[in-house]
Length: 396
Image (cartoon, rainbow, N blue to C red; front, top):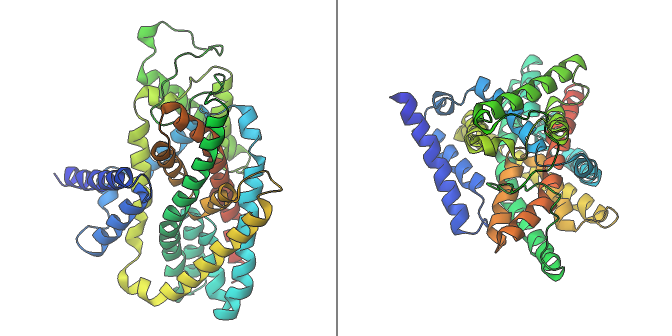
């Protein structure tokens, strides 16, 4: 009974977030509302382990991440992935802007250790926050242990609505171009929008089995196998390339050679289930911050977030034109450092759906923005923030 109650609560919070996003046409993102609901719940009546009780524990989430990233690879091709090097550069240089302002102006306002403890999770996600918390605890800096986790919690909540506004501005700009050019999609590019169904797939198939054998389980087994190979590759190479990035690349390759079909997990009917599970786990981390802890460090967090976001904005504004992007798109790529996957996927999908008036327009917006947002998020959250956390632990 408790398991079902916990699951119901999680799904109700997700539903409210989606309804608000739909009612406001993505002006207020679903992830923002759901995050606020979880915070209020954890501070009042919700048990801290409600997400794990709802079946979304760490083991399930490890599977979710691998399967979802491989799936996202089936929405791209190698040419598109390689073409996103500009988004990677913009995102990483935006992080450099954050480091520049926080380590200069930030250290004039707060002491060095406070800034060093807070900056890595500001430039990334949960992994960097946990690395910093563990490092601070090991060095006996117990007064700062809560700072990285609190920063992780709050900066993502700031990033959701800001990125949504920017993506909506970018969407209106892109739609003017699309409509002026005759509103025609490139038929050779796989459909990327949520729930899209392919009308045809002319790529060579490696697994030519009769239709009765092309089951959901068979699709999931192949996606899992690709994810397993990607994780194994990461282990063998000592994660020189982050395993999340490897999963995406292996998904693209498996899709290109015909081992995986377009939009694999949607065709298997499990994409939304896995996405909700991963989101629930991310929101479950909000349980680590209490009102008392937050009150004691809210000033440091607020000031450093302002400096960090300002650094991203300045870097993005200066570099957007040389990299051939609008400043809104460049800034959005940099802001992926505040939340990463899966929020970057959800935000882009919601905005494309809200702004577009036809399925083709939604598809065009998704094709133009989604690869940049995903790759930017991987560059910042999955790679840069972990490196920064490792370095900053030595600076304490």
